[in-house]
Amino acid sequence: MLDPVRSASAASPSRLAAKAVRRLAAALSGLVNELQETRHALWLCEAELATGVPVVARPEERRHLAARLQAVLRGGAEAVGCHAAALYLLDEATTLLRLRSSWGLPPQRLADPPRPLPTALADLEAMLGHVVVLEDSGLFQQWNPPEDFPAAACVPVASPTTILGTLWVFCNSRRDFNDRETNVLEMVAGRLAADLEREMLLREGVNAAQVKRELAAAERAHLGQIPSVPPLLEGWEVAGGTGPDSRPAGSLFDWFPLPDGRLAIALTVAAGTGIAAALSAAVVRTALRSHAPYHPRPDELLHHVNTTLWQGSVGDQSAAVVCGVLEANSDQVPYACAGNVDVLHLRAGSWQSLADPAVDLGKEAETPFCLAQQRVQPGEALVLYHHESDTTHSAGKTPTHVEAFAGALSGRLSLPAKQLAASPRDWFNASLPHTPHRDWTVLVAKRTDS
Image 1 (cartoon, rainbow, N blue to C red):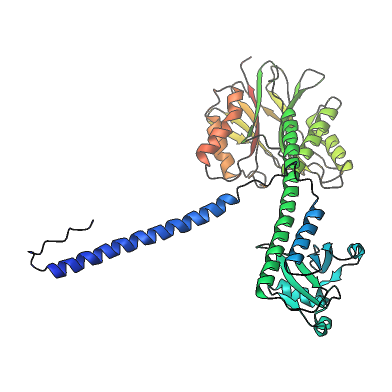
Image 2 (image 1 turned 135 degrees about the horizontal axis):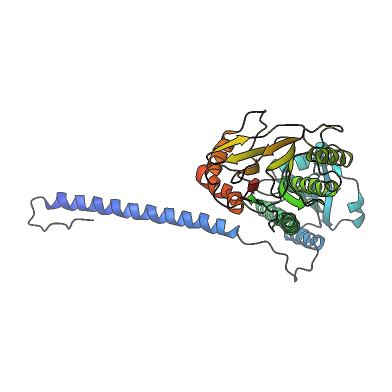
C-alpha cells in the first residue's frame, strides 16, 4: 500500500514526494509484469485447449483426400504464378520419395517409380529447412529436380516433429521467387502437412475405437469364464476373487464338478500379459474341464493337459497350474502343481506354504507331475494364490508380500470363504498402496464343520 504524500508543511516535502513516486512506479511495474505473465499464460492455455478439440470425420466431408490435396496444390501454385505442383512423401524407410499428389502434371506421373532420396539433392536441402529456388536451367543438373521446367521451387512438408516430404512448384518460364512467394509456399506446405496428419489421426481414431470395442468384448468373455455361483459341497465353502479390475489377464480361477460327485478346483497363471495371456489361460481351463472326467487324479490330469498344450501350440504357450479335488465331508485334499503357484494352508494364527515348484505346462512334451495330499481340518482353509508381481522362487522360499498376506489372512479364518477371497483387495490397498501392479487372483477352499 502506498503512503499518502505529506503536505508542504512537512519537514522534507521534495524528498518524501520522490520516495512516493518511486514506490508508485515500482508498484505499476509489478502490475505490468503480472499482466504480461497472465497474457502469456492465457496464450499457452488457449493453445493447449485447442489440442483438446476432437478430430472427427463428419458426414459432409465427402471429398476424398486426393481431391483435397490436389486442390491445395492448385491453389498454392496459382498463388505464386506457377503452372504445376507436386507433393513427394518419404516412404517408411526414409530412403525413397514417391509422388503422392500433383496438379498440372500428366496423370501417368503417379505410376512412375519413386525417386531415390540420396540423389534428390534439392529435396535433401529443402528437408534441412531451406527453400530451394531454381531459376536457371544450368542449376538443374546439379540439384536434380523431378521435372524439367524453366523454373522451380522446393519447400519442405513437415509437422513440428516429423519430416514428411517436399512440395515442388514449376513454372513454364524462367523467373525468380521473392520472399512473399516463398512464404506462401511454406504456408501451403504447412496446410498439406496438416491435412495429412489429420487423415492419419482419423485413421488412428477409427482403429483405436475398433480395438476398444474388441477389448470390451474380450473383457466380457473373460468375465464369463469366471465361475460366479458358489458350489454346493457339504463340508466345504469355495470362493474366488480377482483384482483390481476385469481386464483380461493370464490368471484365472475355476471350479467344476466331477462325475463321481467330487469338486475340482484350479488356478491357472498363463505366461505373457494382456489378451494373449488370457487366451492361453482360457485354453488351459478348457483342457482341464475336458480331461477331468476321464483323469480325475490331479497329477494325471496335469499330464494330459500338458500333452494337449504341447501338441496344440508352437511352443509359445505355457502356464503354471495348481489343481486339487475336494470331497464332501472329507478333510483330505489331493493336489498337484505345475510351475510356480502359491498354495497356502491356513490355520488359526499360522500358515504353511505348500508350493512345490515344477515345470510349467507346455514347456516339455513328457513332464512328470507329483501328486501331493494335504489334510485340512474344520476351520482351516486351502488358498491358491497368484500376484502378478510374484517372481520365480525356489522351493521353501516365499516372497515377502506373500508371507505378510498369508499371515494377515490366517487371522481372519472366522470369516466366510467369500470374504476371505475378497480380502486381498483391502490388504493390498492398505499394505502396498504404491505398488504399480496389483493384479491378483485367489481361490479359497475353507473346511467347515460337518
